[in-house]
Image (tube, rainbow, N blue to C red; front, side, top):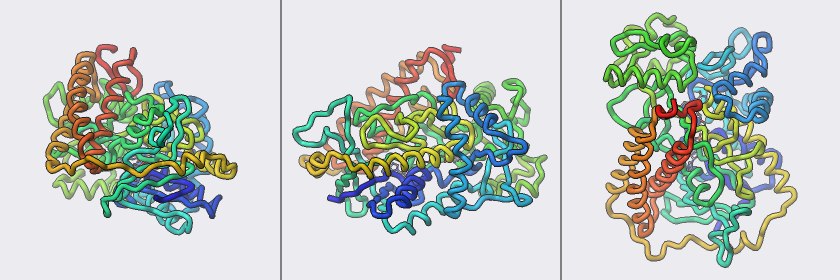
Length: 523
Ligand SMILES: Cc1cc2nc3c(=O)[nH]c(=O)nc-3n(C[C@H](O)[C@H](O)[C@H](O)COP(=O)(O)OP(=O)(O)OC[C@H]3O[C@@H](n4cnc5c(N)ncnc54)[C@H](O)[C@@H]3O)c2cc1C
């Protein structure tokens, strides 16, 4: 058994920035970060475009960033949260610069990019690998903090609540979190880590769909284990599809062609090279992501083409190479020359706006469980996220959650009897699964169903069919789960099944189209 003051689940921007903050203020607190893959593997690492923050006070101001965020979210955002995040952004940005993250400069100022939905240039970036640079700097800072321990390849199966404590009943109105059960993938042992405070910073769930820009870690684990623990999870019907992922014949993680490329002048075309965005929105290529993704989806459905094109041929080549070296390299590796050919693109599942419901301090509905970042519904994004607002969300809520954690640890008013009484994980009667093919088969079925029936465009009929198919898959997953020794693959499948159920259920409850949610029967 391991005891911690703070258990952080996830080593992306949200988990790391939170842990560093707590560590700086409480150098004697024991902070453990567990992460299910290599320590840097996260959505954060793949972020390209950058971080939205008002730094150019000559041309930009907080009001404009607030209004852009509200417009992208279709008014479903919580205005007070949007205002708080936008106004705190410069302070949080300065902090990661102090922690060593480097951003591109121009004439002594931060170089600012523009992305869809922003009315000003306000995206600070590090070439087209901003997330990689932020992750590098944060990991380095965390590793230099003597009271932070990072355990990689440690997979959280479930958070621990009263439900696990012998003789305790789960009181739905007052659920407490006492840490987590964690599979150490190297020793294959399930560990119990109890903690006074736990943070879920587990990222998104892109792999609930067939094609996604997300890395394989994005299986909605945190959302699923909070939902299972009867914590509040909301807004799951809002999933953003990125309009321009690099087309591939192989399903899975697709390479993202950042929105910043369109911000710099790239144009959308059909496979045959015809323009079409003018038919959908007067902002054309720079309309918000839901509009652009639906437009591409519609054009592909009309033509039957398997992809559309992104035209970078008339862009300034030198500037392109300077700003997007990684995108250029990836295209060339795929045999595409962006300066002479259209880049084949498709919309792909990208960012989840819903998740664990949290307040402005990142507190979930479960006592002593905080949640930050893409796994949450904080009220910032509403029905659709404005580009480059999510790295920012991780930093601002990471800070707020850390401040609240520090005050709770200072008060030290925790249920120590329950913490002591948490039992070890029980594997009695379970068998090792000898056929992983069943898990991959069910996962594919789930992803196919979600992509075909609960994708960019939904309908009442499709949602009803999706629910029926889901019941079939969920029953099969449940059966395997109850007799098998746990593996990350099985647990991820179970989590994806939970996430799919939440998306379908909340989609069925919608009575009007909002932001990224679109049901053609409600149009
Ligand atoms: C290709 C791409 C480009 C993007 N570009 C931008 C951009 O330019 N600007 C922007 O603002 N946003 C961008 N985003 C979105 C942004 O990167 C994410 O929303 C953000 O990084 C989420 O950070 P996070 O810390 O909340 O989660 P993540 O960075 O995803 O970290 C989640 C962590 O949790 C761990 N984890 C998950 N489940 C478990 C478990 N069961 N047990 C243990 N550990 C677990 C993971 O291993 C990982 O370490 C992009 C996303 C992608 C995929």
